[in-house]
Structure formats: C-alpha cells, structure tokens
Amino acid sequence: MVDLNNLLVCRNLLKYKEELTSNSMESTSKMIAKAEELGLSGNVICEYLLYLLTHEPNLVSATVELNGGKIGASLKDFFITDIINLWSLFNDESNSVLVGYKPTKPINHTRLKLSADPTSMADSLIDYYRRYGCGEIADYCAFRWSGKLIGIKHFEDIHLSDLIGYDHQKLQLTGNTEAFVEGKPANNVLLVGARGTGKSSSVKALANEYFSKGLRLLQITKPQLKNLPEIMETLRSYASKRFVIFLDDLSFEESDPEYKYLKSAIEGGVEARPDNVLIYATSNRRHLIRETWRDRVDGQDELYRDDSINETISLSDRFGLIIYYYSPSQAEYLEIIRHMLKKQNIELDDEQLRVEGLRWEMTHSGRNGRTAQQFVTNYLGQRIS
View 1 (tube, rainbow, N blue to C red):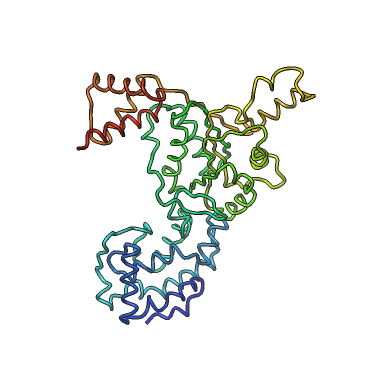
View 2: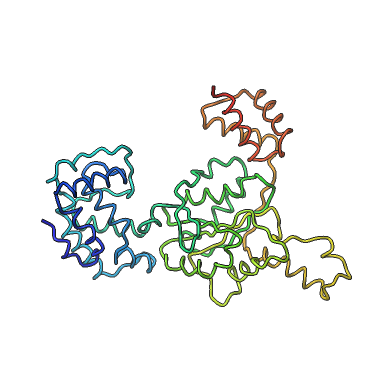
C-alpha cells in the first residue's frame, strides 16, 4: 500500500489520498465519476494520478515556472524519490472496476503516458512543465482577464494556413513571434488595415501555431488597460511562458485616458515590461487616436500645435513593427471563398464561383475575408436541406 505521507515535494496529493488508495465502494464510485467528468480511459487510477501531477501545482512545477524552466539537482532528486514512492500506485490494478475503463467521452488531458521507470517519468513531467506549465496554463492557449488568468475553453481553432494571401504580412508576423518564443529580441506589433482582412485572425492563429513552444494569448479590453501593471506582474511569474497581450480593434478618442496607460506599459513606465510579454494590437487607424482636420488647423486653442500632433501619434510609434493589411484583389477574394468551401469538401467551377461570389460582394460590405466567410456560411446554410 502506498503511503502518500512519505511524499516530499508533491504533498498536495495528500488531499486525494482516499480516492487514490482506497478500494471501498465509496472511493470507487468517486473514481468512476472522475473518469466520466475528466474523460479518463484505461487504468483510471494511473490516469487520474497523471492528471493531478499535471494540473495540481507542486514545488517542482512552481520552481520550473518561476525560473524559466530550470530546476536544481537536489530538488530533481527529491522529485524522483516521490515518483518512486508513487510507482506502485501508477501500476495498481487491484480494483478491476477501474482497469480498462471506457468513458463516454475520452479526453487526453496530459499529452503524457506512463514511462518505463520512475526516473524517466520524472523527466517527462519536468519536460511537460517546461513546455506547457501546470494546470490551466497547460490546458489553454488563450486567456481573458478577470483579476486573474481565465482560460478560454472554446477558443477558435484557426491556423495561419487557413488565411489566404497576405504572405508578406504573415512572414513579418511569424518572424517576430518566432524570435519572441525563442527568447530573442522582438517588437510589439500593430496590425493596421481595412476591416475584415484577417488582422485579428492572424493573431489568434499564432496562439494555436506556437502553443507547444510556450506561447499564450491574453486578450484584454480597452477599459482593462488601467490594470496593465497588475497584469504584467502576474505574467512575469510565468517565466517559462511567453505571452502576447492582444488588443483587438483598438482606437481611442483624444479624451480617453486609457491610451496613456498603454503608452506607459509599452515603453516609458517606471517598471520595465517583463521580458516574456509583448503587446499585439489591431486597428483600422494608423495612429490609433482619432484626429480631425481641426487638429491640423493653425490658430486652434492649443498653443503649441506640433506638441499636440506629436502626442497624437506617439502611441503608434511605440509599436516597433507595424504591419499593413490591404483589401484583397478580386482574384484573392475568390480564392479565399474557394479555400473555405474546399475545407467543407465543396468545389465550384470557376464561372459559378465568380458569379455568385461577386454578386454577394456587391450586396454586402465590400471585398474582404469577412465577406467571403459570410458568403460561405450562407452557401452552406442554403445547400443543407
């Protein structure tokens, strides 16, 4: 019988002692419920133990996170000792009800399988903590902010290959992002251009593309910009991960105070921005802050007109990389439709695609990726009887 009281660095498992070590009817019933809730297959005790080790923070996972993936030799030895103590539990088949279990909806939470020996298992877990983290930070590629990081369960499954055209823009974006996840110098990014051209989708796709390399996306709203110091401090504690703070469809009126919070966060605040954080923003405005012709007329109330203009453009200037997205050509627009339909196993001949696609464009908001998506949605909806 395993005695969890002997654990040194994984003592958080003690609160699950009854479920893990007892064969009573009550414990078995709880484990069946856990298997259904979590989608655990096969040896339920083994899979549940792996789930706990990858979702319940312990001293090793916390140390790896705080130190950018590093762990001391002594702490690693103690961790191996814990895995040795747990080894018989990993291989426990004494409760036949919990062996070979087939849940209603199987889910692979951990991307881990039981290793051949305790030392290999400890190494696999440490590597997992380095690559993915522990708990929600390992489960989700995108988050929102509500006083803490909240994982987005139903994040859009979009990839850069789904975005047709804009090859140069994607090359700029991925080049900067790859440098960032590799720990090299990288810039904050402003994606500017016409509506519906895929600016937001490009940023979302990065979270899916680079998840296994430690990239996470945190989308915040304009009112939350005042919380940036608190957000930055939270993200700083996840030293082994790289975060892109995502500001979608960003623009300001001159009277909005939030843009000054953003200016300070990007560059110029008393506290330096964490090395593991960049800010990516999308906007239809090159300078982000609304500017009128009156702002450029001599004789306005502002005594020093150039100072006023410099203040207006200084925010966008703090983004080191500005990427421009233009409306697609007619051929690119039709190719976007063709690609989306092909993903649904539908192919239209060139003439039908041209006629129907252009007719849709003329009665909607112009030629862009969003209009193409709306055409495809309508086509699929009308086609399905």
